[in-house]
Image (cartoon, rainbow, N blue to C red; front, side):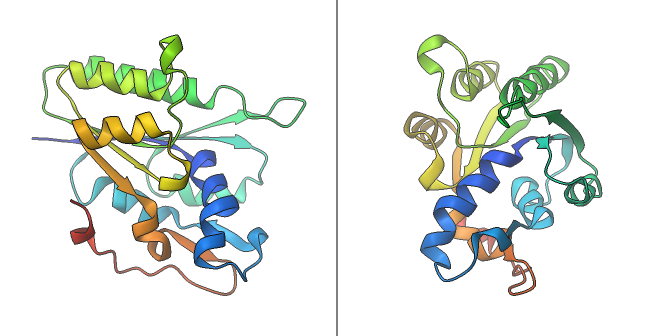
Length: 195
């Protein structure tokens, strides 16, 4: 049975959505009220396929109430402290280690690795999500990238389109986001938009 393994960089999805994509869809709204609707984003990632594993990595702060919503999805959540200069440290590497552990555990199976990030930097140095997805694809796994078009590294997007599937979150903006105390997320996800 084909299972999906989900690797989700929460900050990448949230920050690009809030700082860039929201301006296109809801320019009149206050960016401080922008939220990702975790339930629907997770559903978009697995699309009712059997889940082999699911990892979300984020940083603290923000407040811990946010992470309760993620925990209720049944995913493995790893939170990392920010640096003294309030920068994220180690999020990509933590997800990449989880990816390779799952690849080794599931070697020989027809599984799909779903990555929720737009970060494709590091290819020329032999590291980063793009390099790792190429290795995982070469091991025989299927690959999918789910991210905002605006914030996806060109090479990562091209690799996903040519070797698996790229799903632009803009097509599901109103499903995977909400505006706190103003607009709820649309629960009706049209999976036929995925090709």
